[in-house]
Length: 305
Ligand code: GRG
Image (cartoon, rainbow, N blue to C red; front, side, top):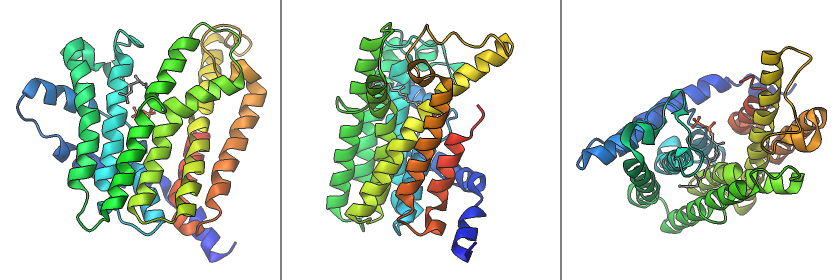
């Protein structure tokens, strides 16, 4: 292997993620201090600071660094991605949507603060994500880049992104004959859009070229689908372990998943195809600089839980 390839191979992905997540947690803590009216800030902080892998902010920082920017320049934008993500989780758990009692092993926001406060905390987090990018991004960053970030974020969370994806997901509930195209439409919008937005905005802030930005966008598109593909496969394999090797999950009932739409074996093969496609987009970059994003694709593809 050449020195460059060796460098990429030796990359300590877990160490990288851990150090970025610590920095992101500190920045989030400072961004939303406890203040009047305390009840809503408490609710915002409960979901924002109570765990979470910080995947989106880490992707944002990694993309910024990939194109020559720094962690500090990317931080307000990286935090904005987590603020918007947290907002969508709070709203997703509400009784009127998924009606979940637990999130990250803890009672959901509305279980602790009530539905009214949880709804408002979700809105406030989403609104603040935009304010934070606009108000806290360094003055040294060209204003046109900040405008592009705000526009990408708005698109990613709105009707052409996360919210639209959730609507189609709700509408498709109980549809036993959903095809691959419709399944992926939901995943692209509900999950991949904010992941794409995170890397794209990182690359914008870092001063990436059009080609660099679009490469990272396509990379994250495949990673987003991979994320769901692996989730669906783990769901089946987990159930088969619980039920004994021969039983397994009945793939003919329940919500639409990759194994249900294409069969378990084909779904696994497709996962490998997605990780390859994601990494192919990065072959354009210096492999040492692309190591965090390459490591991230492997981390998603080969995770066990
Ligand atoms: C307020 C933006 C907004 C949208 C409202 C409710 C809704 C519309 C959309 C639901 C969006 C949703 C829950 C998508 C699933 C996203 C997903 C893959 C969540 C899990 O992400 P991880 O694993 O979670 O990164 P952690 O806990 O690590 O943060």
